[in-house]
Image (cartoon, rainbow, N blue to C red; front, side, top):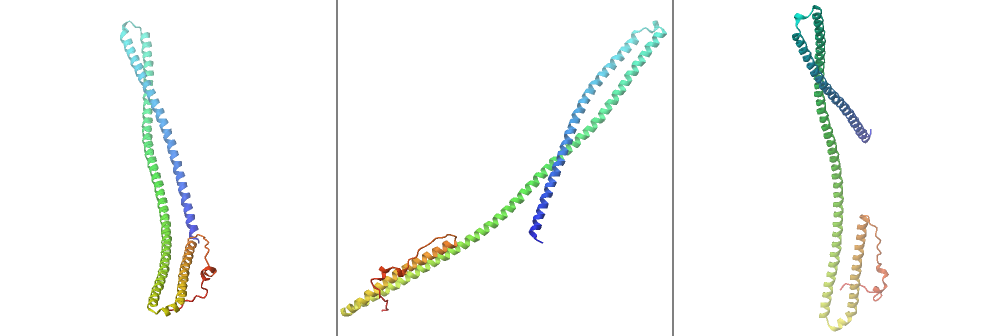
Length: 290
């Protein structure tokens, strides 16, 4: 099996799993928000109903107190001695009816108050549950933020490692180029030293030749003057050829360096044999050892 395909499929699966997990968390958070909004609306409605019922209860208590006071005043103001039996029965039945009515109202209000108290207790419990859900929601949001931060940190670490590898490759390539350039510069210095040493040796030999010529008789000097002139001319030609060869070698090294670095440069090299003026003066000049 191809490990690269396995890694790609694993990364795709992890990405899809994380996307699914985030979607489920988002849906759960939306459900929590809807439930919290519904609970808040119910709590506000119940508080409004409790306020209205408390006002109604207060009104009923005041009405009951007023009826009790009126009945007491009626009993106290009425002279029982002057009332007939029928009037007394009517008055008693009327008072019983009022008492039963007020008693039923009081019982109804008590039941209503008890029901509202129970609902208030339930809503308090719901409010506590709402606060708990809010705390859980905040914790989940913080957890999601930490997970996102961890994912960003992991991505940055992978990017940094990749950049470090690229930098290492660039450093190795730069070191190899520098070593090649140093080697080429060393070759140039070696060629220059060889040319200078050859010219210095030729100069010393010519000085020795001149000194021996000064020490010889004039007749020998006249006989050897032609050979010396030819030899000097040949030496000059040799020096010029050496310089030309050095320039050609320098141009070849430069061209090779440019080609190795990806540059294309055409260089026209002079042909030594194509310069007729340089060798026309002494076509038969031969360098002979002295």
